[in-house]
Image (tube, rainbow, N blue to C red; front, side, top):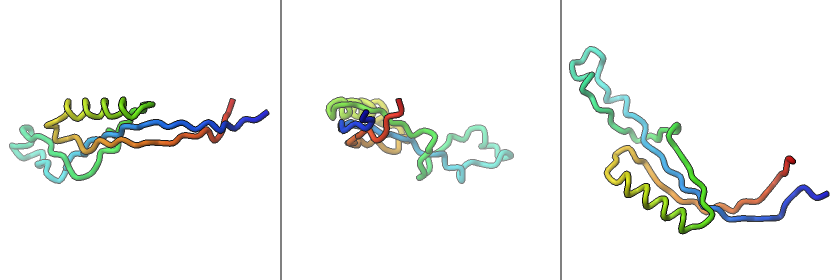
Length: 95
């Protein structure tokens, strides 16, 4: 019985992420401005907030990415949106 599959498929992944907080600009707790401070984004990605969504057509991935970008147009926290074309092959079938 052959367990390996030679089926290859193409999928499109939309990856997007946000910037981390710039902790260097947070005032000291004793500073009167501490409670009025609005967090600023840093130049580092917040790996906890990186997300991805898989699509089986380029058009669907493009559509999702464009809607996401339009929704977050003026969002200073949006770090990036990218679409990747991935060739997928089954390398092991467990059951």
